Length: 448
Image 1 (spheres, rainbow, N blue to C red):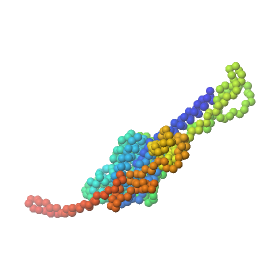
Image 2 (cartoon, rainbow, N blue to C red; image 1 turned 60 degrees about the vertical axis):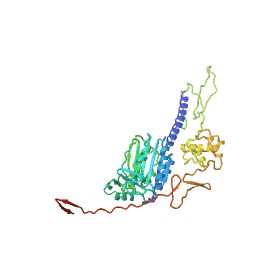
Image 3 (cartoon, rainbow, N blue to C red; image 1 turned 30 degrees about the horizontal axis):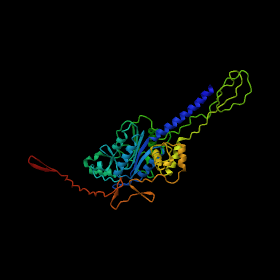
């Protein structure tokens, strides 16, 4: 009986490991991110690093199992369209991340993210030329989940200075950097520097804030709030204390970007269980350390019964993540665009498999989950199976997607249409009133 209980423990450990692995994989699959990097501004000073920063963060998040919606050097129309796609994609997610690098403005305690085509002359233009941070947070907080926001948008902005000059006596409403944001429960906001201050763009490939974020985001088993302490320490060290990252959190639980790889819960072997010694010692062969099931040494009538020993079957179950990674690699080879082969089987991987089933009906794909048989079948396919699908801003030319071109003087919209931008006329400002003033008192006129 003791040996049977040991076998039961062995199988229980096997079941526990399988359940733990499936839970970890499912949890990571429902994570989305919106990543934007704006650098090539048309009407103000361009920035060196936001695109580099955003591309690196997008790659890191994909490697961590996020479904990433990313865009670079976005016009206002393209920015809004990407936000719309992200909001739809985040509806069933357990965690959502926003990362923005580029110019930002704070006016009247409202934070504005600046598209590359923004032309801000006065306060009226803010509503029509920028994207408000509050709107994006509003989309994110519609769902009861963990929301993480990283803003590397506190960089020195000439538009803020010009706007301050044009607003005259109301220029006090234009702040340096970004303002603190009131959020709902379950949200963390991390700023590249403290509120009211400006962050450095950096002299290397990345800004100090994003460089530190990339150093720590994939650390296994590191809670995001503890991670921000490490980011803050690194940035202060790199900038000599000039820049201090700031964060505001209403998280109610822990969030980890990179879960620690699950340790196998299976024992190397079932430990031998001691049995009562027989009354009369007899020489015995050394027992096999492998677990055995001894039903009985004798029959009911006392006759010796042949020894029956059973070794638990060696169940060779393929690693689920390796299986998913292999199938993702094959789907990409066949042109079905499963995304980064990271072993996280999410919506994009299932969509790629569904596309393969559509264009390779002979495959007879019964479900949208990875199996060994499906991987083996995909390995036998040759050439491109799924058709190349270009974005609305691209044309399929000679088997490759190429960005559409417009006539001179026209621009390409995010919907793939060429348009002629309306010419903007500079406003003429009225001459300032004379600083002298006169007034009448008791019938006499006095002037200063």
